Image (cartoon, rainbow, N blue to C red; front, side, top):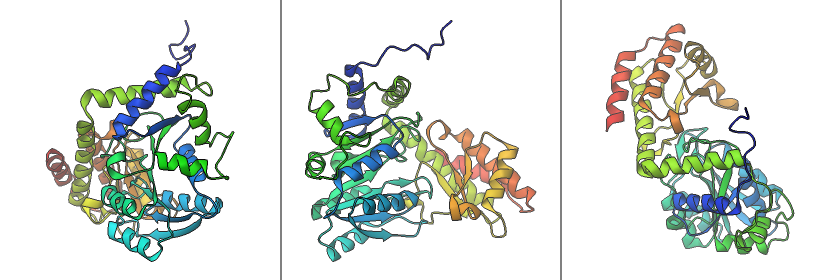
Length: 367
């Protein structure tokens, strides 16, 4: 018998377009939305290379590792890059953006990550978008981690390029992504001689061969499994309501933070201000004298199913990340993560208060 995931019929152009329309509704935008056949790094890089080049002065906001990546791409395109870096335990303020734009009026491109899942912070995009719009710069937003976990309002916030992926709060696969593109961004790409053309990175190819052609014939065969999975994610969000999905993530984040604080033993939130903590993941600072990566390894040995990881690179020694997104944004997962962390800390000789932590998590999650 043929496996149900094998021998699938080709995805029609009409169905592909209908999925794009559903993404547009999710993002609250009337802009063109292009679904790209790859992980979100594909449109993230493609959007930068399409709109930036020699003559572009970009303000690149760094609140985590992805902001650092974007600065590298911008420089590689020949853009002049002004980095605005803030400590990873906080968020950037709209006032800091305003000051940077005032000091450098030539800035015509602003790149920002909405929620940095790697560091656990989230940035106030609504306020920042108003500042960028007033200045007149093109606004590029990485909403890969935030979409589904918190509101993403492309048109209301004045975002020109908004990239999302299905693999985090949407609960879908990593192999498909999307980008919304404003008319200003399309015009910038068309005028950019360095914009990728006849390339997998090219958004202009999609515009010319797909959007401008009325979305009647796909430029190439799409990946059916990933597209069907994305469609299923969108259908599930529509069925329960986006507000319900974002509330579930906010509840998981509040419960994790409260539980970690009550657990004791020196474990504390990495992002100092709860208002700046991302609902997609909670980052914790390992107690003094312990190693985050070792604690995570012990916790996973106790319960291999908990969504815990250590920070990347230099943060591996000090940061623990609880990835409560998608199907893991539930009270049960939060309880399991706190219990596994308590086991790991106890094995390290660190006294903890698990019962208090679980009660605190339950109380915070109900608010």
